[in-house]
Image (cartoon, rainbow, N blue to C red; front, side, top):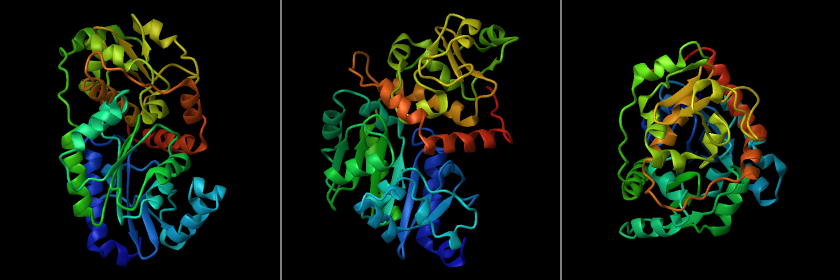
Length: 360
């Protein structure tokens, strides 16, 4: 990465902001979420499959020629789907591929854009009354101009949906069944606005009893399953309300890293034999054992573990009795069979071959 951009104070601020977002599981998880900075005709955006948490340790930002990408978007050029054709390769020393949400960042005019899979946002945005809840909670934030975008496939389809609804004044976009986008004139402004929006969306998490880890470990003995890396994931299994809400697919990254829906089984053998309709071949990465806990397949990656905790965090914040809108089987299919997401899965699997999560 070239010295002028590395030494740019705003660029350094973006990296620190990105790391902070990536290290907070309530803000974003694993390779989810992306940040960007528009500078001198380039859109510096997080690479596909990279983790925001690594922003200050590694080169995770890709330079994309903004004018060329915007022209491609305006003419429905198919190359705008991935943005790969518009990467400034001379400054892309790590040969990274831009985020699948690059067109979303390009569409929004502000210099800084942050897209996160905020747990508090998702817990509202999966509700049938999500837009009304957002309006109520953002009413007191005078500097926030927001829109609510119904669920659609991430990437190019989403960027067009945002463009149809947005104006230059819009600085917050709530994505149904997906997450949050916040923009600003600077990293500091964006970070401040994002924090205030997330606080406005915050809901108390329903408590659940702790898992009986020795009993669960005994139930997994001799199987291809292990305890999850984060004990918080067990909350899905230990509270009946959480379990009812968790059935089905609520947001894209769950489908990408855990497969469609969840597998609920009375024991580990029955769960391991289950093949969800529309799911991947092979055993499920996660099995929910009601009143006992959650089990992860030994091949499950750290991203899968992060999504197991995310599911528990989301459903615990949804009120009992709330009407939920889940992804359809067609929407699950377009995610699991999308080349851009297969690329992310491949990067995740490659990373997993070097680092395995620690079970707690």
